[in-house]
Amino acid sequence: MSTSKLTLNLVEGSISFEFSPEAARNLQGVIAQLMQQLKSVAAKNAAGISGKPTPQKPTEYQYTGDVFLEIYCNPNIWPSPFAAKVLITLRDERIRITTEAELTRLNEDISQYLEQVG
Image 1 (cartoon, one colour):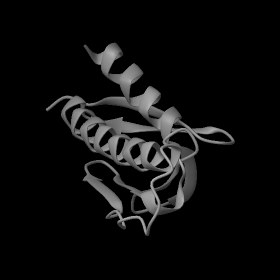
Image 2 (cartoon, rainbow, N blue to C red):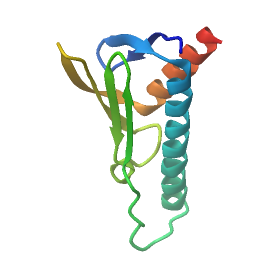
Image 3 (cartoon, rainbow, N blue to C red):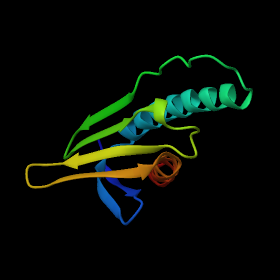
C-alpha cells in the first residue's frame, strides 16, 4: 500500500502527513455524505418547512496509519455545507494537533491529493 503526503489547509496554516490514496477515497466518500446531509437541511430551511428538524447523526472518520487522523462534524449546528467546519485531530506518539478546518476546503484538498496520486 503506497502512501503520499496529504496537505490539509486550515484556517491558519496547513498540515501535511502520509496518507494512502485508498484512505483518501474513503474520506472523500464520508465528506460527500456529510455535504449531502447539510445540503438537505439547507434546502428544507430555504423552503421554509417549519417544525422541529430531525437531528442528524454527527460524522466521525478515523484513520490509523503512520499517524492517527480523526475528523468530526456535527451537521446540526451548520446552516449549509459552505458554512460548516470540521474538527481535525492528528497525532502520533510525539505530537497531537487539534484544530478546525472549513469543510469545503477539506473536500478540495482531498480532491487535489487524489488528482496528484492518480
